Image 1 (cartoon, rainbow, N blue to C red):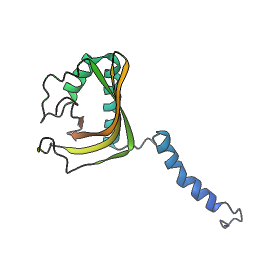
Image 2: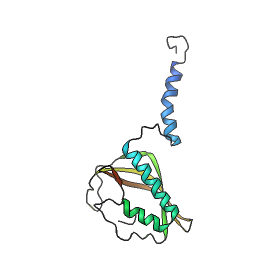
Image 3: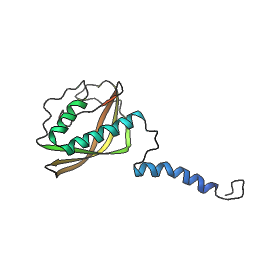
Image 4: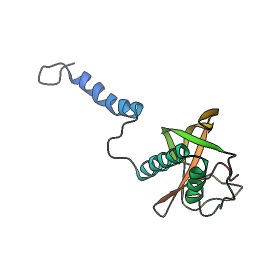
Length: 149
């Protein structure tokens, strides 16, 4: 295929340029143009995982601070365990049909697939795949603590 200059690389350049965004997504890179929900979600999970590394008390405090205001959480005792999340960012999408205990939360609801690792005293107790709902409300991101349901 010729590109008008006789170079014959137009098709290759088109394929290469089309693959660059895919490679960035697979590698977990960003182009600096993250949407607000993605940017807030990345910050949320980074803070949650930092709290998990600090221990059960720090993570309990994190879950209390970031719990959606319409769904207050009680003691949120994870029994001395911590929970780490590894989100699959390509799965982040709106979920306007989501309810918690039959109640629709205020704000824009998003859901992302996650791998969840539960640890106790640094040792892995369990790993599972699931989803995590997050809500953008008045410029802040809130979650639903794993011990709130």
